[in-house]
Length: 421
Ligand SMILES: *Cc1c(COP(=O)(O)O)cnc(C)c1O
Image (tube, rainbow, N blue to C red):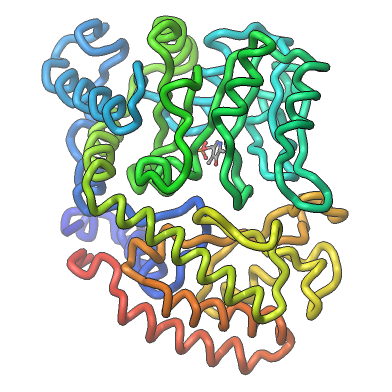
């Protein structure tokens, strides 16, 4: 594979090969990452990338879209079937522009939207002041509770009654517990607001029925396709039929030009994969793995936000971990873990006293390792390594030793063994 690239452009080729080796030889534990199938990779790299197809199936602005229509219709039909949704737009380039599309489809600039505070697990596109969302709309933020670190639906309801937003957003980037989408929708209904669920992180868990679903009642649901759903880098928006026209207009021509049909083809492949019985097993294993990992970490004195997890995601609180005990060290510990071949990311924790640039937490998760077929015993082992590194971060010998063991483990669970570049 990649023979032409190798011959024509050795520099680009070698960067790609280096990245493949990195993926193969490290433990990928960033919870928003995953390893998609070779079929998804093949569709993403196909000749569909050559085609302009502005518009929608059967309503294109360019000629020559017969087969492009076939693939986009296939993706739409599968997305609807996978999630039990009335309407699907498979064109969004990624999660951030997709959220923008949802907002502008039914809201006016300046309208009020309610979402979770970014520092508590929201997303930049949920009203951060540096992001288009925060600049264009008037966001009010709910929080998690200081003591439980959980969402309190009663308080969120009261805030909604007081603030009367036009849209309520649920769905997060760093919340390890289950989300009550039904309750969110009921609250929105009561104040005549739109309900919007951003299930980017948990779409795969929802497809595998290990997390409650926001379908079919939620007005708008956005998800990226590259996280637990294990597809290509992109997004899809699902909504009720009554909003279909407004939504489609917001995506094109509102925000985007020509759709990336190679990615849409890969989305179609991923949706089909996610409807297979194996995917249910995959989702169940993600959660089993993450619970085992969480238990192991806690047994070794590592404090977790909300004291555990129900999902693919774990958030380590370094301030309340005895061996650390100070704010602002997330980045340093994430670097130490990476030296041992364990790839995570630093993250704010609820009520983090440190700055978002040097936050006090580490976010990690199990979707990618579960795709490598790792199970509970490996999670227990990895949990011990992570705890050891955190508890004895000054001890460089330990990091070197664990790096070797990580290499061995990676060899036992080969990634893309038949990709030969
Ligand atoms: C990842 C994510 C996004 C943004 O997706 P991008 O593809 O990175 O733009 C939006 N919302 C949530 C909750 C996410 O987790």
